[in-house]
Image 1 (cartoon, chains in turn green, purple):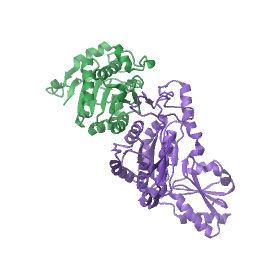
Image 2 (cartoon, chains in turn cyan, brown):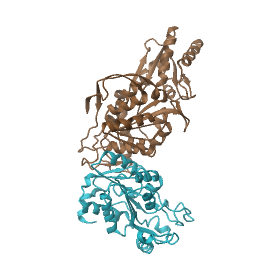
Image 3 (cartoon, helix red, strand yellow):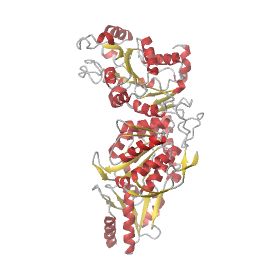
Image 4 (tube, one colour):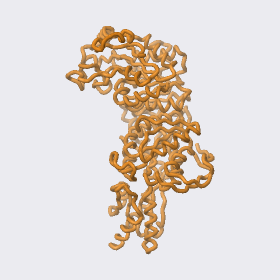
Length: 251
Length: 378
């Protein structure tokens, strides 16, 4: 962690609770870098999160107003804040299970309303905090505690979903793209509408070790073998895109 | 912090529907945020708020469901705006998740439950009083909550103001438990010129949570308080204490004490003809109106009946009439299969009930006949 970012953190709560190899620490740092570079007063941002590992990124680490809410409901709480406090920025940071499964209804309606809420989905394709169960972004055939034979369901492309609901800015990066990710978060602050940033974040503890990717290095290899830019993806067939990770801004 | 303000509506007589009076009471109390989801028989509150909040420069949103509604209300409350929502039984069930969160995070907010027949969808347009226990025990965990029950259009107005005052003062969600009869009733009410309001304390240098039964101050977002708000067990500064047994014990006992210690100033009730009564009727909400009418009919025939009407259902004033309950013949009238009666039975086993779940009001004649029958037995 860069020394200049410590001013945004409650140092008394360190170390972070994240497991070795978890990508959420990089995401935490990248969010703060974006805020620092934009020179936004962190005291004028309300961070709202749901339940799960990702929800612990802002609460209690960020030295700002944080609202750690109910499972899946972060965007509903954020809507109440967004409407009543036009003077503040509202950022939601939560996981794939929180935003897309139990909170799926709130997600599509928040995107439809297109209120200025910056939503960051720390997407590790698994329920980490509860011990590694299937999430709506778990890839087909992947093994989890609740899909011992491999996932029989199809995962969501959350960016395509949110974009189709009318959000102003939708993109996906991985924690291995910290610069692009930082710029995307900065863009979120500048967009006057709903922005959704899907961040692929590895979970070696619960996802990796059940799917032959027990280390961060394995994830790095996997991701760089499978990423494809949004531009390139447009020219690929559906079958060719199977198991690919599309990165970049969705138009 | 107490203050006296002018009423929003010009003082005088009005002829209003119960739901509209409730909305006007909320606005008079300073409510400037409403989030809700349509449900019969409460929708008029939402429709009226939608129009009036535009005029008053407040905020209104129709959410995707009742869960979203209560969450948006809590978000708005922490933004420093008095906020409310209204619903009916099935919607209230969905809101219980958020009500639990409001209890845990000591968030002031007001929830109106216009009761209809249940369980589930039941009879959407028909009155009931089946949520007495749901309103008290519906959320998970241990807590104390405040529930008010109006019996007239005028009380819909003044008890809604009271609900906001109690909510701000004790930092607790307050529930207005009304029913379809009162919600859709139209009658005259008198709007007074001045109303008394209670506003939350805002000191950002003191801890915003806990306080061993005392009410902590509540700063809003954006005031530099670095608020840490969580539905997990926390200490007085909001730091999560998910594994600390003492933190959990302190928090549970605080949430209970902060209402229990002030019960005397919260409990409200009304007595009619109690001085010389031989038969004690206990009823609340619209049923209390029928009970009072029945009592007057009985008294014309020399039968000395009286009415005890709890205005706060939780905590309620039944222990104040412990003596009367023990000495007199007691009949509890309610539009359910017996919920409040169990509270009365804490003081005496032999209590009679007049229960009705036909989706109709309990008529005065029904109470009158039942009491007459009981008198013959005496």
